[in-house]
Length: 83
Image (cartoon, rainbow, N blue to C red; front, side, top):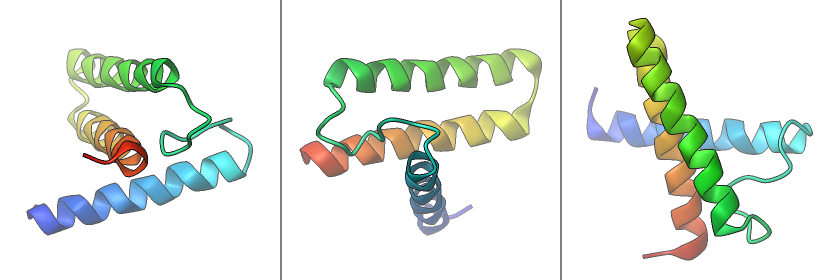
């Protein structure tokens, strides 16, 4: 997978997370000012835990997907706060 493909997948995942919020599954996404930094860290930690679970279960497909979710969550926060 190329870096461009990785960035495309992150964008797709970001759009999916936004759609889930719009459907009512989440109260916030990480690009929203109404989400505190502590709430962001909680979401990020939960996603990192899912990476560990997939790795421990030997589920490499889900392992990769969970890494993508972490990247999307971090990208969303960076969209909000910038560099």
